[in-house]
Amino acid sequence: MAVRMRLARIGSKKNPIYRVVVADSRSPRDGRFIEIIGRYNPQTNPSTIELDETKVEEWLAKGAQPSDPVAKLIKIAGIGASGASTA
Image (tube, rainbow, N blue to C red; front, side):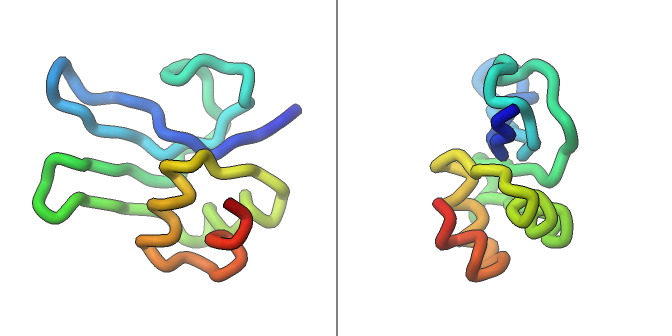
């Protein structure tokens, strides 16, 4: 089972707000997930990025691969040098 850290949209029409989730790579974007590890709101100025650092590092250690947008969020949040280099 390939596990990915990715964004799941929860905002309403024309109001994107995202959860950062850990999910099986085969599940749909807004479908089943294993765990919520943060949230991202691109509409605030500056963008709101809230990530649970311990959970992110734990999932990276287990081998979860972040998607490109999530890897950028992890790098911006400054979580673990090992997390930024895996993307």
